[in-house]
Length: 408
Image 1: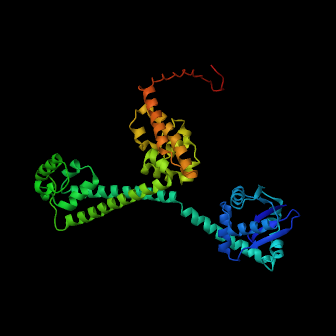
Image 2: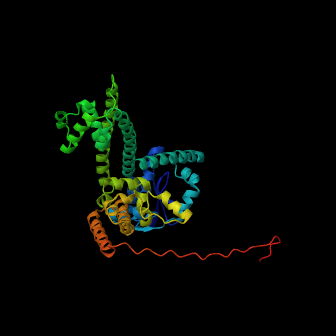
């Protein structure tokens, strides 16, 4: 005999071939508990009530079980060793959903029809909360927030360091030209303070190249900067300490991003590294959305303004977006970058899909294939292509008209 098993807001119901309910296991009337069970069924998981009902029906000599979900049917078949069939939208399920108030009273789940409507509303709200919570727990969104935080820190550090260089430059302007790295500049100001402390003995304690240290000592002796008064240097040092703390926070966030990207998207990380992988996920809005993008879209992610400008004005479209940060592209010749970007975007599309839907690690093979393709491009196009001659536009003959509009 054949029976159709339907999971609803009331519980798990078994419909015989005559359309009547043969057996049932009802849920507790707790909206949160019902929502969790329905979410599990939606995700293709087998809940305990379903297993119990199938076992009971099996003892009643039912041999074939019809389900509306393929994954649930396969799991029941493998676990309980029964014959299963799949009907995407069975007539029994449609009838149950259309007339759920009558069925709810008939099986004894509620006493009055209006009570099931109230429960449906409460369960729907709980399902929405579960979906929002599940979306927020996605690890790829954590990666996106980490890389966006790093970007915010970089902008803040650059803003503050511009102020520090201008402020301390009033006292020691030559330091700005000698020390380019922001973190080193801030550390020197914190450790040494006024320029008179930039001596050979003090600079030996700071990790600097010998040539740079000699230049700093000479510059400090001949500096044209103004003298500091009172607690001027203390205020500048306080700001520099805050900047150094932000550098420390940035390193912590980068370490976190590296480990999280390795967990979420190991194949993308193997291709382009942690920071660029995190940036791609952030620009796409998540790993799953990145996986659904064609390689042509991945290629220009981050260059949307240039792309829309090209579509609007007819100018040349961009050949690459944020993936230009990868060494394979920005270290290559200008005329090779477009083809390398296309090859990299194709491999990134494959890596994103595997990371999102499979979980297998194929990063090493993808990287090896990409390297072979890049070598082929560099070997095939060692020189820039010849410039195309611009077609001369034909001069247009001006037509003079009289006052009455006749041609002359």
